[in-house]
Length: 295
Image 1 (cartoon, rainbow, N blue to C red):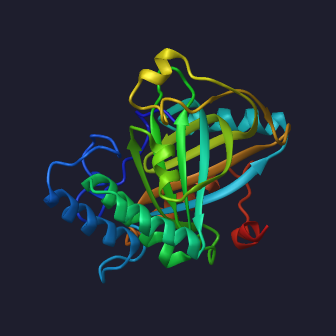
Image 2: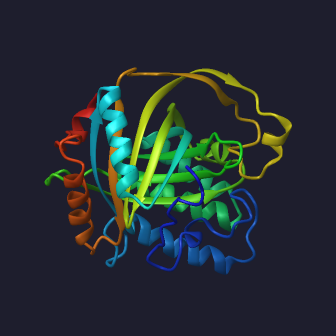
């Protein structure tokens, strides 16, 4: 998504930069061992190994729904433009990578032992600890396909809790540069799937609404010289989506969410109140995310 509208989520110990180290690139050496100590401390906060942390440092409250006719889509977009102060179009590619199982945990431990740089050991500590706690960890790499906004983001999303109408999950998102996909694969991650999300994003206060289509990539292309030379590309070598097709031709996904401190429970009320403004176009319903994972 546009970098001007992306939310940078601070960690408990200061900022997200402390989790992954300085912005020299994930595979480059840090300034000193002190940076590694600070980053490792932030990693413990992130994975919940300290008494003050309960999972990741930020919480996302969200409601998911879908609309199935062009008329509903047009009415929803018109209503959102009237309700929200900011809106933009986006076209993002998302790559989902997964690490799970004891053999993967061993690979991560070996990768951590073989790396001597501060940044690499800090990032590996975050991912390895997450994998050991949950048995399986999934990270998402998202990149805008708009030529003017070629930023990459790595995202961690925790388990979804759906005891109420507004679901919630732990989350962490940070902009990155350097050979990210190759770095994650060296840690033992395997690519699970990739897709293209294309649609509109709206912002009203702390509430963000995205209305988009889910698309399957049918053809890739090699990056151009300008793509491979930029420092914010996935790796400078990874192919880019050239053509894609909608998985559900007459359906749009709708996600309404707010991100903040886990102690701030007023956010779920903000999400719920905003959904009421979109009724009856949007009718929230509980989704069994555990069943989706099993499938």
